[in-house]
Image (cartoon, helix red, strand yellow):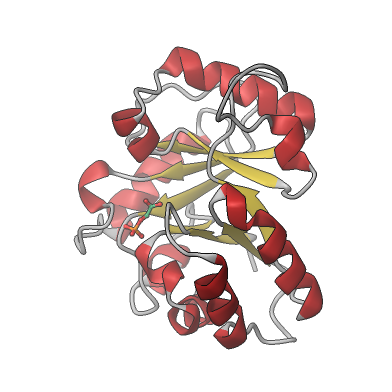
Length: 218
Ligand code: PGA
């Protein structure tokens, strides 16, 4: 079986209480294929509690942050540096289209973020809205997320996602995920495609039972 990444992007959702409720319900089968890597990316303030719950339930689940500062530790009020994230996460999402749009993150800024994350030893999940968007050096995984498909209930077709993944493969990136309105019902249509190595899941990952089911169906 090929390697698959099933990544939960919680965005700016959940409190400590609702995170605890999520973990009370979330489960993954003990005989889950080792080829499936599950990653949960909560907002920063929940990283410690997500760490704790994963350890407590002995889940084979990795943790990621949703962005990283382009600066090192220091006088940068409100920022979280890569070295600080590294204490609690193995992965970081960089370049999500919501960051590009709402926080004016340009290619230039994203290159700096990738460099900081890389230096700290974080694995980078880099989001692009199409096959033409620049991908900085040092990225480990790319997530293809067409803007119109995000949170809309109108996912891209599995055929097109596969074609875009192939184009990105040709740029030297071996792991390409699809993201945008994936659900437990449609996830397998993407993961069964030759060049799609998993999914980046927003809305559906907020529901513990649906996300559990996505991991099994993928
Ligand atoms: P969605 O979000 O699954 O809610 O469409 C995906 C994403 O933005 O990563």
